[in-house]
Image (tube, rainbow, N blue to C red; front, side):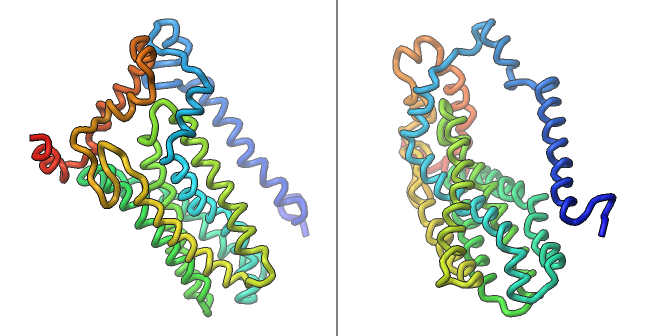
Length: 310
């Protein structure tokens, strides 16, 4: 049968022109009307000598040498990577498990992706709200909490015996998947200032790698059914969330340990530059960011920090 002048075989291919066109238009609009940075476009800033040109290899090394980035890669692999994997297997899961018509199974599975409309931003809001009181340590607790709840509901989804309960658990699971992605990127900008692009890129790529890993580990072996794969993937996510306490910032601390009161944001972000680079002004923007990131100490911990310094 024809739908809007196309067969079902053709329709799913034609539909890609809609997001494709939207991407092209968005890119052109950003290129024409966008600005590279709050201070202006890079070309103009370089002419005014308000922006220094950094060395690509050095930026890359600074990012790769920061262990916090690699933990971020692992954690994002088990939130965004899990989202991609679930998108791939969920329709067939409902089709096989509950004997739904394939088109109905696809419609039910689409509810998982619909949570993207707001849940990811909710994770970021939770991270920011926690940081208002507990600083970076609050952000880390939120990341651990969202990842753990994601894993727990993923495991529960694999044990559901009725369609109604599976749909409810799937929606809750989806919320925590997207929220953990937002919570991850609530921390990413603070890992490195000099190598922010490298850190963001690696952690984002970790999501794609995570999808390949979870797909191969839980949904390829013949020894596991799809339900068992979902359950054990959830258990693994809870285990991976336990790497969150290993993220420690000298000036802010980690989930269980406070930061060093004598360590400063300027020390942390300034350590990415040598003495010559400091003198040339290359570190100016990083030091400006260090000053504005002081609220990450957390108002709740400021009194104990002040007492320690006294």
